[in-house]
Length: 451
Image (tube, rainbow, N blue to C red; front, side):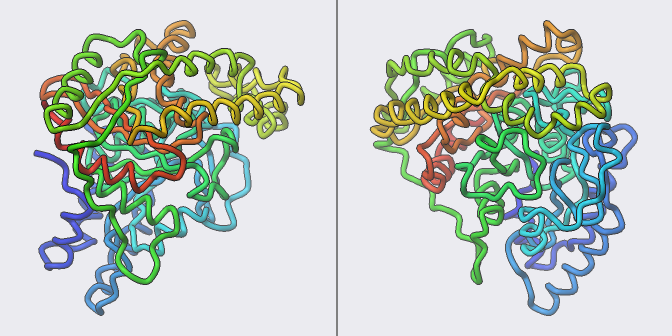
């Protein structure tokens, strides 16, 4: 049976069929289950605070005060967001001596204002610097589809918390795919907004040029609701969810180059099946020669924005606590040490140029579509060596990084058949076309799901 959505649970709360206290207790019970993944999916669990917030939500509801559809709904937040009074660890041990945050990050404050019940802080790839979801400090949560496999990263615990019903929605961050990758390989929906729409203050950065904050949830509509809260679009009335866009007549483009290379058989089969199902509904799908994407590895050969901007933030901490870093993450940050100011300025110019040239082609279509990841979730054993980790990490990240570098919005939708390992189907829109992408995704999701 499918996991309940925010919209379904909001209706149950409104009708008195359940309470926030009951929903929160159920979520906390799943987190605490010794047979489950809660101990690895969460770095911190705020049981007492969550129950108090749930009881307050129920009392406010009885008084007729319901700030949004998220009121009383259990949610999780990623372990790099500031929470007042808590030390922000970012999935690392190297920050365990840092001072507690003095205030909530704006996105956390917005969740609270919307009435959401925050149950805990989820595990992640250390400092958000991998698409695998492996963490040597707090354990690696097993993929809900196969516990011997990784959950994808860096928002690993976020995806597991939603898929395993430890939260109804989760806050993730996406610098190179860290919302969409775990959503894809764990079989949930993940939305990456255009970065500038959601403030990243109070969130430990990986790359300030690329970082974006997005939701993971059980439906497109749920992602739209949470995204509106993150973006400060709550206002005085109900949250507005874009109407579903008619499928017939939509034009989708599939790039022939880069994103369709080296697909494993499960991914290729699921994506082709999904595209055929959309075509049968009247969607016009064209393969296009977007050879410009082949320039990305060359442009980022010296480390790109992630390495340079991460090193700028980490250099003093590495000097003091470098031995405590994940050995798979440390060298990726250190690549930024060798980048010069001239390299960085050149990178900025090349990004702006590529964005302009690609948009001149893709703006003629409603969306660009591709598999979210080239491969299904690798096994934990496969990423246990530096060589295996590097190879699988690159394949998990390759397609999603396109959207971050080009400053786009994108969404990953489940497109695997029952019994198959999860596969994501990605819609990538133009910059600031977020509501349009969500509107199309509402119609696309049921067509590509479970073919």
